[in-house]
Image (cartoon, rainbow, N blue to C red; front, side, top):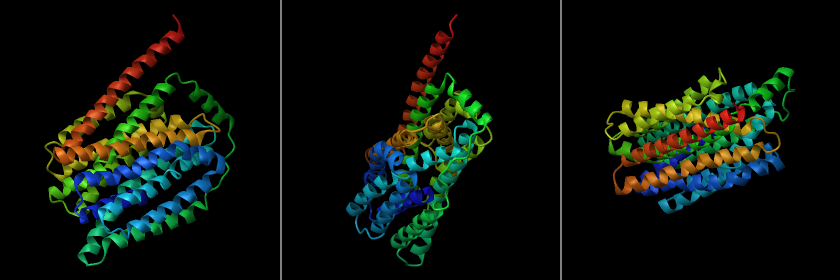
Length: 384
């Protein structure tokens, strides 16, 4: 799914560039869909709790396919800006339902949930990594051969939606039976005193990391064009952010310690802050790639913490809580292109990355306060 979504996002950007869109308009292309996604996630997860996961995801695929068809035939920037309303709203009925479906199948074991969640995360983040590359390569190839890149790329993505719908018919509905060891793991995880602060840290960190993802995905193509990077290289560099995410998710498969430790989140965010500030003077593709990979690792870690603590130990409201997780994520994706686009329009094309660093620094400060209060609360409850 995220190969499809990220490839379509890059296609929106390349189409906007072909219409000579301004930086703020390019930012709006990422903002409009994310805003609709964020709003709809607040209730789409609850709907999947009632109507079922499978019904929700199939309705999503139908809406996304229709949006892609319309995008393939858009002929001006004003029309293109309207299409993500349908795409973003439709996508909201996929991810909360899919994440809750995953937790349903994992049962009550935190180890099984963490492992399956990380494999799931590796899969969609690999799609995010490949998506911009897919669009960049095909767009440049068909443009060089004189074929209509816009129509062909968007139409090919409808094929991915159809394929995904076919594959989902193979997914079972029932979870495996919990063993005694699974139930013991569930009890141990539910009594961790730092769960609430880790959930908060994961959520605010997810907002900041996806604020960065939205800014990079929507605004870097314009900076890359200014630096005379071709479509293939622009797609590859945007994809490197998601390569970092994939790496973080892959490493998280082998242990669940990341779910109950605070320092990995703080270290990853600090590295990402320094990297984003360094983009003020970056002028080589390798510099951009290293920073985007490091920020992607941070994104993968905080996303995993937030989603794990949203799903673990829940029963009837997993769709609702997954929806809250996705709504927070989408707020970041919405605000990153919007605020970053304004800065790129009125200051310069590198200004958005300073804003990203500032948002992440503020996030780290808030997390530190919450962690300190949580630690003090645990000490008080433990008594003298």
